[in-house]
Image (spheres, rainbow, N blue to C red):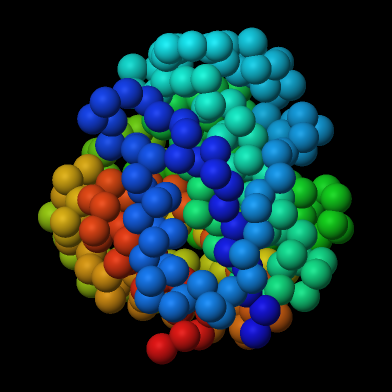
Amino acid sequence: MKAAYISHPSAIRHDMGEGHPECPDRVAVIADRLLMRGVLDFMDSFEAPPATPEQLGRAHDTLYVNELFAMAPAEGYRQVDPDTAMNPHTLTAALHAAGAAVLATELVVRDGYRRAFCNIRPPGHHAERRAAMGFCFFNNVAVGMRHALDVLGLQRVALIDFDVHHGNGSEDIFAGDDRVLMVSTFQSRLYPFSGEAARGPNMCNVPLPPYSDGQALRAAVTDRWLPALRAFRPQALFVSAGFDAHREDDMSHLGWTDADYAWVTRELVGLADSVCEGRIVSVLEGGYCLPALARSVEQHVRALIDLQ
Ligand SMILES: [Zn+2]
């Protein structure tokens, strides 16, 4: 099976200050783990190109994109929201993170790859059409999805978001776009405090109670996501792969394990193999406990590429 691993050196140069949980080591521990465990032997590695303004403009307001270019500091930090800041490398990293999703989309939709995993930061799913927030600047997965629809000619794509935080940015961009089905789980009453009421008929939002474990995820996937996804018949799956619902991650109160990430990924692979020739593009979102993040991503990628 042809599988792609996509990253970029700028991902470890963007930082938001001492002690910030969304830190450069996140992508470094993932890269080290996948290399040391031999997983990368089974994937072709690519360096992400930067996304172009035209590609970004398919998911974001042009004014907002220009604003972000203008805000990028030449030195020091520029605060964008209380949790989100730019350093001199942030804009470059954000452009390559979105570009990674575009390249992954081309490899999977056009070039015969069945799966692609983007090990990138900054993450994207909180970035709205006109706003950076929650550690996110450009909505990477959304830029890739619009590329699949508007440039590569797909008619239906699905977004699966299992980050512990609701993907408000993706919902903002895709609510009412009937070419897209978004299914998600997230901890209720947690940042960004949205998602309990879906903003469009193409949104399948499943809030999970605080202190629930992987059983709640499994029920949501089996009872809610899979029937909706099968009925929609997507031509490719896109995954906002966040690993912050892990029991060892302090960012939330859910109790998922490494095995839950393997399980949910296998379910998505089974679906993709039956409805869309196995096409899956997975893009890193959250995950802040570094050891749990590295292990869970390994489980996710092994399941993606059918590696035991
Ligand atoms: Zn998150």
